Picture 1: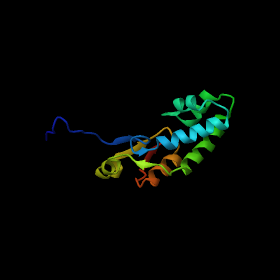
Picture 2: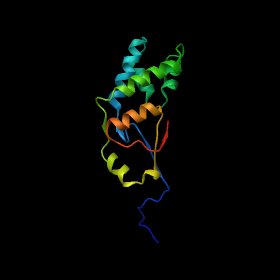
Picture 3: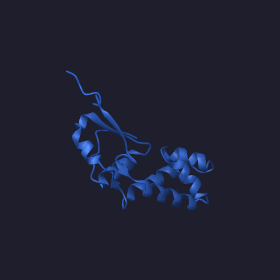
Picture 4: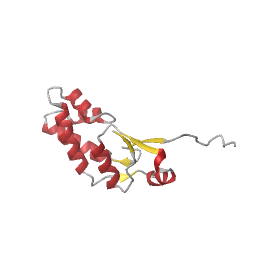
Length: 132
């Protein structure tokens, strides 16, 4: 059987969460700015460093004097509760519905509770495979 040259053939699809399935930019930046202000840090520098990396890694980089793991856990609990401006990215629901549930996964630098909160808040399914 032949497939068109532009057809995609794969066993599964891995999706990033933020900016791919869920538009969370305003929520992410709001929480990091508030965290930076609370700790007397330059909010712009913190926001510039936070995207696409685990919270503890960001905290260790911008505030090595703090307990990165503890700060990250507290920050991600606040982020998981802040769902007011989250929306599904255009086409996210459609692409997930088009794939068998056993053939899709979400991969994110955030935690499992944060990813689950973001997906459920915008009405997207939480996949059986979620790498956080």
